[in-house]
Amino acid sequence: MKFIAESHNTGNIAPYLEAEGVRIGELVQAGILESIFLKADQSGAFLVLTTDDEAAARTALDSLPLAQNRVTKVELTEVVVP
Image (cartoon, rainbow, N blue to C red; front, top):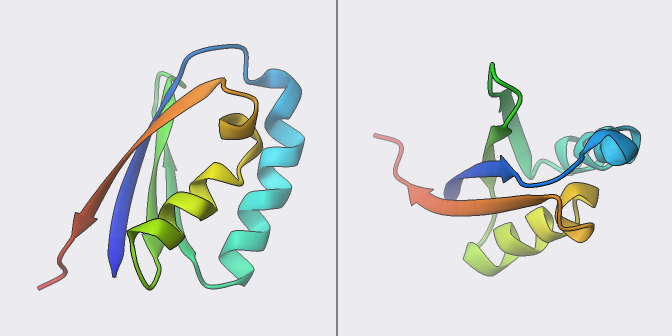
């Protein structure tokens, strides 16, 4: 299944950016995270994920340091690729 996640930064993300980059790399290597697009105003990002189900996508997103430290909120939407 494919999902698009939109994150909305709600706090200071700076202390967590290095760890976030490492975890993003791990998710890319695992084939879960396909793409990431940063918002131009740096208020969040869009992520494209492929997982078996919504619970797996949510688990991957919840593993990101920005989410773990509650400085971002994420909306998750399943999408269909024609």
